[in-house]
Every structure is written in structure tokens, then in C-alpha cells.
Image 1 (spheres, one colour):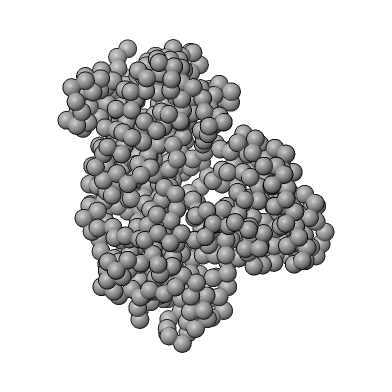
Image 2 (image 1 turned 60 degrees about the horizontal axis):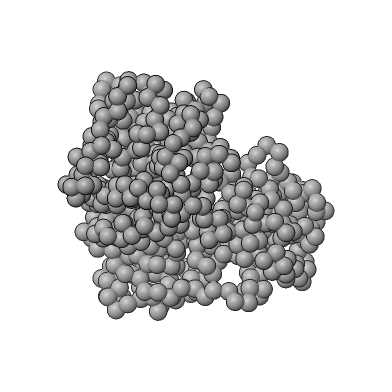
Length: 597
């Protein structure tokens, strides 16, 4: 593989030389700013060999580097070995930024290339500014991988399908009207949607173009004169075509948007609103030909507020998902005694239990199944080469989720497979304390996730322990498992937490070469009370699954935390018990029995 990567880098350098470039930046995104992307745009993976979901490769004429975050430090080090590409551990104090590194090795006047279709307008503007400090020039080029990637995957052509109103709760027509109303304040009722989950949510359509994410490659232009979906036309069934006609949405080829933007003023009177995270190539066209207004797309925030139908769907799918999890946890605790199970075989069994549930459509992300030291890798990926046998001892971290027609799930349970060390028990308990502190918060209207994030970490901080990932993110409704803009995170995320929003609660502790522990539920923001000091909110746990009592050091828990824990387990028992057989009910009753001192 290292020879292959070196050959690919050499081919890219030939492209750079022929275009007068001294460096080329290859991000992990696609023209739609996706976190997870179709294989066609996995150019960073192609050029570097690094398979993680986040990272940026920077290739110069005689050097190369890859920047990625703490989730992937160990994985990237292994996958880059022998490639000639250096690992830069992003966000560590000693790690230079990409632009600082380029500034230190290039000379004034050198050109740094990007593909405008896979870099957002905001990213391009930031790169221009940062590179300008070193008198380096950012240059937008054609996609080099069209030339050097000989067996590049084609764009997917699988058909898209309707997401029924019984699950969506609000019609496409009403959503478009709400979008137009929200952007009036910016001076327009015309807007381009480029984020795939925004488009799927708006149109009440789903697809299968991105692994684990039921979205489809497209753009959506909304105007007072009518709306246009830009999509590969083979993907449109007769049913979908008829539906879109009823929603006053025309269909145009996916590649037609560029030409249509150049003719925008001939057909539309209003200025066009575009988001700063639209890709740089479309942004430039919109500014030149449509007198574009630059403002955040309203859909991200709109879809974060789940309507009553969606909320009930989440409650139902979380119950079914909890049944699958109970069956799995019960199975794995017994199965490891045989010595025949591994991380990957356990994942396969879990997927089978989910597939038995009504409305199941697939997993919401590739399961993170990490046993012992593998659990210290927050985004561990089991492969045939590293698949670890499970033994009746230690901790087994399983972060998984399902896609259901009525909701998307994301749950982590750290499962006790046998005897534990005192350190493993203490770390598990610290994680649980942080989880419970978040889950049982009451907070005033006007609070953002950053203001609450520290509650998950306080007990750890007292022991000199921390984790580098965020504590929580929104979850889509039969959409992407990662959804924003609200989050629990140490760095400032200004979006306020409001009733109707859901958010994960997933603190963790990771000790390299030893073990890891994480506990994750999805929470729903709901009203708590209104006093003379204003409105207060709290969280309703949507995830229904027992948390392993065998790893808890009861002496580390406060009386209040014990009460919270037992209250949650009582709810889990009441919710799941009717859907289990007699043996499973007996197991769940013991697993959720009150924890006492």
C-alpha cells in the first residue's frame, strides 16, 4: 500500500507542477460539506491511505503532511507508516496549523491549490487570509483527481424514496414556506440548499448515497417563482416525480446548477441567499451572477427542533432499539465464556438483533466495538487484521446505533465481561457521574451547550482526567446521526438549547494501552418549570437501556446520583419489559434492580 500511496502522491505532484502550484490541500469533504461522503469524493483517503472520517492532507512538491484530531492519532500513525506523509496532531500546542507549516517551507509568491467544489466559501476565505500572511496565493483549480484517480467510483444512481408524513410530521410545502419566511429578514425569499440532510429534511425524501446516512446527492434552489431539485435524473422514480410535481418542485440535472446560476437574473428578481458553507465554486458563481446575500442557512436550526410526530417517533424507536440492546448485552456476557467471540462477531450479532425490530433500515454509523485497550481509541474501527478476541474479563465499549423510519439512535454502553481492576471501576464510575450530572440538569432559558459541558467533566477534572471530544451532539430524525448546530462542547457553541431539541450525553475516559469507558444516551430538552426568574428546562432521557452496575464504585456516588441512577433504571425496566420474553424480563429485572450502598 505504501508504494501505491507514493505513486498517487507523485501523480498529484505532476498535476501541481503543470498548474504552477507549490502545494495542494485535500480535505475530507465533498461539494455538500458532508461529514460522511460518497466514495467518489474520498480523495483524501485515496491520496493518503488514511481511512478516518476527519483529516486534511497537504501535499507539497517535496513534502507531505496529514492533520487529524485526537480520535485518530493512533490510527493515522499506523496507516501513514511508509507513505512519506507525516502526521500532524491537530489542536495540540506544539502542532503548527497547515498554513503556518506551509508558510515555513514555501517562499513568497508560491501558489497553494484547492478544488473549489470540495472546499466551502468560508474555508477558502480563511485560507486566503492565513496564507496571505506569508505572501502565499490561494489558487482554485479543476479537480485533480479527475485526472489521477483512474478507477474513481462514479456518482451513485440508486433511486430516492418518500419519507412519509406519518414520520416527518410536517409537509414539504409547509417547510419550504417556513424557510422562505425565515430568510425574509435577509432581504430575499430565494436560497440554495447544498447540505444533503437539509435537502432530504425539507423535501421529505430519503436516499442511500452516503454510507449509514439516508441522503442523496443534490442541490435545492428555492425561489418565489418555483423550486428546483438538481439531481441525477436516473434517481427519480415515477412516484417521486409525481410527488415533487405536487410540491411545485421541478427536476433538473445535477450538473445544471452551474449554468443556471449564470442565468439567474434572467428568471428571478430577488437576490439569492447562500450559506458561507456552500462550496467555493458555487459561491463565486452566486456572487457574480446572482448578487448573492451571504447568511447562514436556516434549515440546520429548523430541523434541530423536532415536532411532536418526530418526538413520538424517537420514543418508539428508542424503545425498540433498547430491546435490541438488552438482547445483545445479555447475549455477550454469556457468549464470551465460550472464547469464540470477537469485536467483529459481537457487532454482527448486535446488528442482527436490531434487524429484528420494526422499521429498521440499517445502522446509523459503523459500530465502534472496542475491547480492553481498543476501547481507549474513541473511534476504534475493528478490521480482520486487528479484531480482538473477547474474554470473560475487562471492559467492552460498544458505541452503535440504528436507522429506523421513525428515528435515529446513538448509544454507547461499556459492558463488564468479567473481573475488573480497581482503576477500570473508578474510571467507569467517573464517567457515570458525569453522565448523570448532565442528564439531570435543570437550566434557565438562554443556556447553550458550552455552559453545561463542564458538568460532565467536574468529577474527572478533580482527578486530573479529561477527554478531548465533545460531550454531545444533535441526532437526525431518520437522517444523519450527527446533527447541529447545538452541542455540548468545551469550545464555545452559541446555539441555545430549547425544548424539542435532542442531544447526546457521552462523556468518556480513555487510557492508552489500558482501557476506555463511555456511557451515552440521547436526551430531549423539555420544559421544567417557570418561576419569577423565568423559564427553566431539563432533559428527558430518550435512550432506554440499562447501564452496567458491575463496574460502579458505589462509594464514589453521591446519594443524589444513586437516586438518579435508580430512577432511570426503573424507567428502563417499565418501558422495555413488555417487549421481552420471560428469560429476558428476568435478566432485565436484575440488571435494573436498585443500586444500594
